[in-house]
Image 1 (cartoon, rainbow, N blue to C red):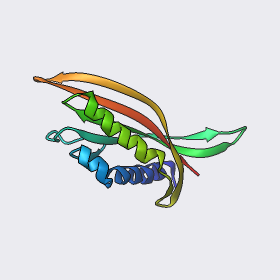
Image 2 (cartoon, rainbow, N blue to C red):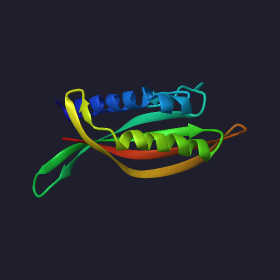
Image 3 (cartoon, helix red, strand yellow):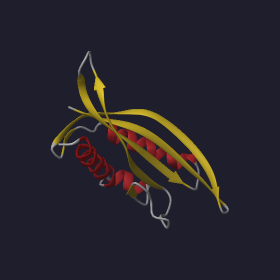
Image 4 (cartoon, helix red, strand yellow):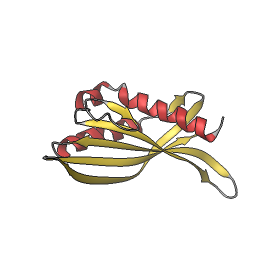
Length: 136
């Protein structure tokens, strides 16, 4: 399986994991792949594929990983975004097992960024966490 095929498979697995969680669904209007539609009602989550790389050992790769960004967007403030990202983190901390033809060994957070932007008369905030989905 090519690196791109693997990345797409894991990306879909991750999107489905978030989109099918009832607790997360109670916090957001939707979980979108790549970008939310222009008429999406906040708050919502966007899952975006970043790429793939290998975790290197001494002279050889130990594992492959798929990098994804998960962004929570809202126009009401950081408290709701915090609750959403806490739920995402909880789901990913416990994630593992079969993902299509591949096996997920775990998911590790790599970083968090928060940004704000005015659009019209609304202040939009977004928190983006990057995660590494580690494959065995």
